[in-house]
Length: 258
Image 1 (cartoon, one colour):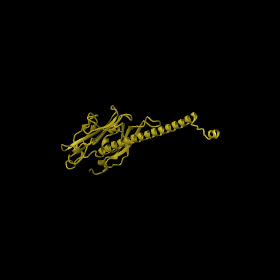
Image 2 (cartoon, rainbow, N blue to C red):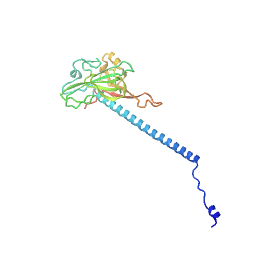
Image 3 (cartoon, rainbow, N blue to C red):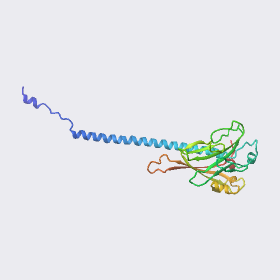
Image 4 (cartoon, rainbow, N blue to C red):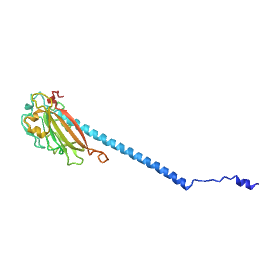
């Protein structure tokens, strides 16, 4: 047998070099890092979307409750009373803040500064069978009842809360939504007198109180709620988000109550 020809037919086998293996590892690590960044970004985006969706839900809930309650300001059972003066013949005060409700007055509020939350009290009555609910979602179980729906922002809780009580007291307030840090209210007045519902000026609660008969001229409310921004820790995001709604009083706008 020709040994030279046999040995010459054997092919030399060669594996990967150390440099090739290191390059492959570096490429793999680069791809894994990119995948990790993509996953982290997707998770952050999903978390941001959930936070914003929750904020929008809380905003809608808060404004819906305020809208429903404010629109009913001055409601009373017309089969029992003819006028607001008949329905509420005595002056009273809101227990939570001492604000006055004169005979027949349907709402009042307080204002100290743009940095301190305003308060709002809305009065209406129910016969117990008309389905009228208060700001806490309750109904009268004992027949006729008068609600003084008191809205305020509790800044001492964590998180801060928009609260409301149906009896004008603050110590039994029910939390409506979280992360509300401020509530500012401007009152639209029709100073022309009569039954006109045309707003010709906006005032804060202290200005309305100082105006003779001011609370009886209020036609609408412009409410601004300030929420803590759930994305405030991220670069370029503001610390707060603002929501504003104008609410007309049905009793002044000529609408028919349900």
